[in-house]
Image (cartoon, helix red, strand yellow):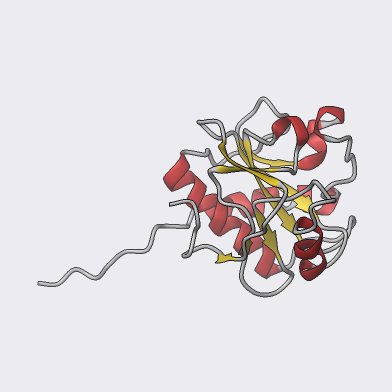
Length: 175
């Protein structure tokens, strides 16, 4: 299962990804900033000329959206595309994540921990495992030194804390 219905609403894009090809084990989850709106980002990712995408989109309010299956390669980190799951957060550089966005990312990271063995720790370089951010990849990841911005990078500990409380849904036990 690579669509995550308990974590995100499926909103598949038609272009700008490769079916299959993700490395195992995954290094972790990378935070990005959209530099715009969720709707505009979805339209741009669905444009074959853009040649960019991410696995997930995270609006300021509402449910996380899944654009690309997690077993497929999104075009978000250049050299890191096959090792990392990517989440684009609605907003612009300098923004902090909203409470809804923090909760959405924490739920996704919790799922990745339980089902893909991604560790709950900070990653500050492409060789580490855990919760990273786009700028940590430097030039090989496209040279986006302001992505997602200092305020979001500073929120990673809060995301890790909340991800630690995430558990898979359970079914009631009948007697």
